[in-house]
Image (tube, rainbow, N blue to C red):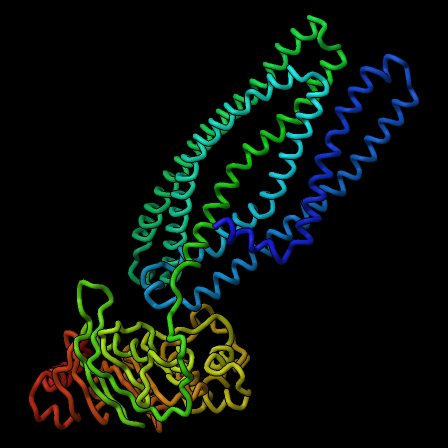
Length: 577
């Protein structure tokens, strides 16, 4: 993990070197004051060297001005290095997230992922800046102060430095408890973020069901866990700081007693004793800084560890020799496909079917039967195991094709439409980012949304709000259809695309979908059976198995599950799931 962290410094080697040089000079200049103090007390003042006193003071002042500039450099450019490292980590993490499989997002809440990108990496940024700087400055100051104090009196210096092993033991003892406590605190913080993200996203549902109190209680539960975790973290930190501060206070007591005895015995002069008292802070201060740095170190390490956890998640895999899927005809075949999300239950069992070029195949059946899973397997969102059968496009196993080329040739229209914050144009353009304005308009016209867009004050440049909140369900659906028109794929998946719409809107959407299906091989998950009567083939899926297949008329005549479902829906004019 350390090697990985250091690798982020590489693009900033020159600036880091200058930053470290400035930090070293800050430490060196810090040694000037006690040296001058010693000279003042032992030579300049006793010998009444007034001119030298003024010159020495002026030199110290000039050096302090230089140190002012050096500190500005360290603060500004040091933080700049940290923020650039944070930016690169964020880019790497975001890019990696784009490559992770569906399973990762099935098991990780959005809010928790966001915490790793934001607050976790902020702590890493602080560590990246302050870590090398604090370690260098403090190390140099401790070494230089030891050497200088030794020139004054080696015995008194060794007595003081004998306390260091005790300080190290205490530090490492409490550091272990701090590490665990701060890790737990970060996890609790991620839970709160996930709760807030979920609650805000679903605020309309909350208001509709008047469940604000329920959401508050859920939030408070996470907040209590965070407070408890913070309590443990700060308890560990308080023990750490109080214990280490006590030991540093002992330094002053030792100096007071041992120095007083040495002065009394004539071992050192009053000037040396005074200088020693001033100079010993050069040692105590960096030690105290290192102790205080431990909290920041724990935060930064915890944040980087959580960053690494995501970065080490296995991305979607594709065959090393995977080939591009080009000149797609659109022939789809499932051969003995078996799939399970986990080892406890099979979702699909030995599913086989074939869709010829340009045909429409509809999947119907009760909820949880495996219809949507079939739709997810075709674009390779979930990978089949070695014994899970084969899925072929134009006779080519999708495992032997690049993921991007397979998905590039498949368009998906789902029941739950996702639109990005931005304009209508931005969201249609998502289908093909290099499309022209004319192509965008043509796609919108085919989706029956152009006329509505033109009634808006800003037309295609109208902001739609987060997830398209300013649009109706039908309008959002038609924008998503326009997006697919612009993509112009050879294969189309319609996953209950009209099930959440009213009858009037459904007719309008269905016209757009019929236009979209022309010339494309189409896989339809049907919610309303009336929409798939004209499908080339209808497949009934239940409990992960195909139990019936045929045209609408054939299945009605057969008198099986499809007929029962159709009769039930026709009779009640209702939905089934």
